[in-house]
Every structure is written in C-alpha cells, then in structure tokens.
Image (cartoon, rainbow, N blue to C red; front, side, top):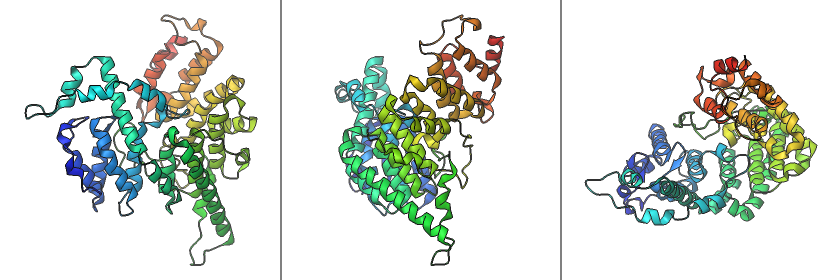
Length: 454
C-alpha cells in the first residue's frame, strides 16, 4: 500500500507550511494500529495538504496512497480516510451546494497552471520552502491559476478512484456506503457510471431498513437482543453530523465519521448524490414514512427539476427550513447525513433557491422564521438565502437610509436587529456572519443594526 511512497521526492513538493517532507510519515501514521497516532496524522494532513480548504502541489501526490488505504479492508478508520479524500477532491461542500461541483469552470480557470508549475524551481539546501518563494514571484492572476491547477490535479487524482468508490456502495458497513455515496456526488463527469450504482444503493438501503423495522416491530431478535429500534430513529427529523471544526481544524478522531449511520441515512445520502449528478428521484419518495428520505427526495428533485418542481417537493423543503434547529450535540435522534455537515434544514433552505421565483415569498417567510433560532454555521445558509431574496439588485449603496429599504430588506433588517443568536458562535461575535452582511451594505453588528433602523 505504501511501498512506493519513498519513490517521491516529497521535500521538493510544497504544502501549506512549506516543504512536504513530513507527509510520508503522516501517511504511514494514518495506518498505525495506535488510534492516537492515526488521529494526529489525520489532523496533520487535514491542515497541511488541505489547509482551510486549499490544496497544494503535494496534495495530488498523496491521493493515490489514500485511495489504496480506502480500498484495503485492513485499513483502520477507512471512513475517515475516505472523508479526507472527498475534502481533497472538492474542498468544502458549502461552496458548491445546492448546485454541485462546477468542474468545467475549474478546468477553464486552471488553464496555464501546468506550465506555471513546471516553471517552479526545485528546492535546495538554502531553500526548503519553494512554494512560498515561487508564489511571491507570481502576480495575482497567476497565483490563482496555479492554485486552481493544484485543486484540479488533486480532484482528478481522486477521480481516478471513482470505480473503486462505486464498489464501496455494496459494502456491509453503512458508514462506508454513505461516505462513498457522498464522495461520488462531486464527479459529474462520471455520472453515467455512478448513477446506476447510486440507485442500486438507494434500493438496497431502503429494503434493508424495511427489514430492520419489521424485525424490530416483531420483537427481540433471535439471539435475544432488542432488535434494532435505533434504525427506526432516522424518522426523528433534522440532524447533525461531525465534521471539520469551525476554525478548519480536525474535530477529533470522529471528524467526517458519522456515528451510528442507519440504512435510511445511506439511502438519503445516495439520493442527494444522484440528484447532484442529474437524476431526480421518484415523487413517491416524498411520501416515504422516513423524514430523512423525504428530505433527500425533495432536495434532489429541486436540484434536477428546478422551477418545474412539484408543490409536494416545495412543501417538504419549506417544512424542513422551519424545522427546529439541530443543536450542537449528537443525540440518538440525529441523522448522520454528511452534506452541509448534517444541517439538513440549512440544505433545504439552499434548495429553495432552485424552485424559482414562484415560491419566493413563502421561502422568504420560512427563512425569516428560522433565522432567529440559529447561530454559528447554521445561520449562514439561512442568512445567505434571505439576503439573496432581499437584495436581488446587489448591495445597498453607501449611506442608504433605512426608509429607502424595500419591504423585504426592512423585514430582514428588523429580524436581525431583534435576534442576537445569528450574530454569534459559542457566545462570541461570529465574524463570518458579520462579513456576509457587510457584503450587502448592512451593519456588521446587532447593535449597529438597531442603531441604523432607529
């Protein structure tokens, strides 16, 4: 699996902190029998070859070894390695939801990046950070082009493993199946091969969930255990899944590894993945008894059908948008679906964008209903969509008085002025939220918003 790792001159490659000479040992540690060593290696790799969503020259070189780890049944924490691979392929999914990964645009933007990389001088005894020195010599456009090429090269390296990822959709472990479905969602150029496998995964997961539910209803299992009542708890509604911490650091050993993945969660993940690849699920799933399946069907149908989406799809999205916030802690009722870090209500809010202007008023009302009840990262998709609807012509001009606001703009400003929660994260001012409002010309703190409206 790692036999050829020393054939690569890692020291001449760059990552977020300079030379990538430390990457081989980190990859080895990811296979260690020691859980602490594996956790440390994941954290190191998550922050150097995937630093706050950026990829580097060394990132693509690490991918084949990570793919081998995922393919090897002997690898510990395969779901964790698969999550790292998925991040390396596409970055943070909130950048692309609800539309999917724009690979054609990536290919356009990265043109010329290969030549820029070829012109980078090799490292030397006097220069063990070739990345930083070379970048400083490039203008802004060439820097962007080079980083786009790094990202595309890493994406294509992961793409080479798509056939292997499809085989994981039939793995006995539901967590690995969900992770594979999530990974496949970001490769639209591979849709023809992935969609049949995803559809089969949906059917198999739903059938397995039905069997488990029937067994649970029938009483104790044959071995005397209590059956699988937990499997039916996917009907609990909106949920949470662990993922990167807000600061981009690794959030412990369980980052990217949803605990207690149920068959309904696998089906939901595969449904959304298929929707991102262009396949709308059957409308009958909108009446499925499992809320997470109805959510996934609505999200996927909105993605594919757009303004032609039926009223039942829209109603399901509106219902999730106004659902109770998921909270910060995992409970037995949480649904570990990886998209948007498990914020199903937030994803539903984003999906409302796709069903068109016919539903804009109801969507705006739902967003304003939810906004006072969410904070931190959960507030961002809700505010993003509310701002988009309230400011169709772009940000306010400097010095715009409150009496010049439109009805929607005024309503949104008043909700924000009256709601302390969206401005905060863990009791502190959330800078990302403030910056989002600033982009639209609105005050950057609640106190300023109150003063502005007065």
